[in-house]
Length: 219
Image (tube, rainbow, N blue to C red; front, side, top):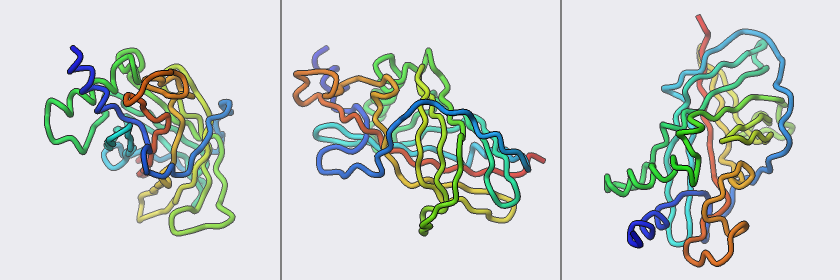
């Protein structure tokens, strides 16, 4: 049993730790009213859209993806007006562990009650509350997007930079990599902020995410 627990501890994910720099840390604030902008309705292509995650603890790191289940956007002319998408928490994937049993161990732990409690909360959501054109646009940021991220039983508003483009009849939004504090959403396993005497079992509170959304005309 001790060996199993040690293996679990060695595999647990969150974001930057050790020498890795925290990228674009964002704070969760009170949930806001959803954006009410209307326009051309687009449906999210769940096969082309994805959330990338990156995580680590003392002595190691992991990365992977989470799939989207559904989503829609409204476009007013060339501008994104509103939208939301559903995250399929049953489709968490680790991409760096090549040993099948270790990979499954990590993913199952992420889905367990200690992390995202997927049996109780199989879906998470993101709902856009505000979109602003960037004042200092770059190759990776054209807009600032704010939205309510709901994980488990907690919903908080976050803001991050994104590049929003139109490619033929497809609209694409790619966020910069950004970091959230998982404990704000009641994901507390191994947090040195909340638990003392964890020693090498400390799991960093930060999770690095990058979201890619591809959407097309509902027709």
